[in-house]
Image (cartoon, rainbow, N blue to C red; front, side, top):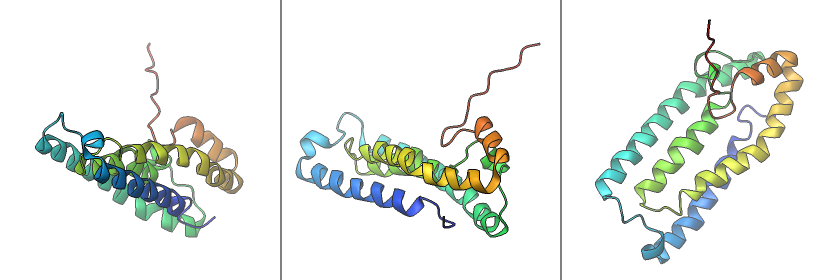
Length: 157
């Protein structure tokens, strides 16, 4: 497993889906463009989504690289909420944000395709991490969600 994990494969899948859905949106704008919301509103939502995604991506991108070299498991910071924040940033924020910039509801499908690809591809990365860190990683997995933070029930007295 390389230090980028499944990232290249996942982004290639998302980019291919963007290309195909973008072409369809261009050819059939009456069908695939979002026309029931103003362009300015879509822009604001898109920029907000992309900004949040970039903050998550950049706040989580340096740590795993050095940890990979040192064979350490990162479980602090954003990794205490999401096991794969870089993938989460693309699937949940950046990809839908870009789709909204193009005003294409069809391009939002790239996010769904990205999520389905993630669920398929992540198995390889999860197996590698389980081999590397054993029960420590399995315990971490039980506490922290893959790309969505786990909702922990409140402890009532």
